[in-house]
Image (cartoon, rainbow, N blue to C red):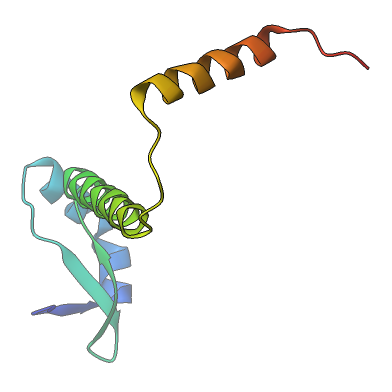
Length: 97
């Protein structure tokens, strides 16, 4: 996975240079840790945002697959409209205590 693992102390000292490199458009991540073992990684924010969006999409897809596998009966469009109208009506009524 990580070709080169930079010691944490070197990353700490070079953090300003690393962020400038990212600002200049270099997309290469920086793997760091101790004893040549990657413990963490620095990535440009654009890369992080893409990874996060991908992860969220995968979680949504997984949830959809699980729900479809349950084979529960689905509401018809008419039933859904009726349920939403009922919920809206209940929400608009003042609470009685």
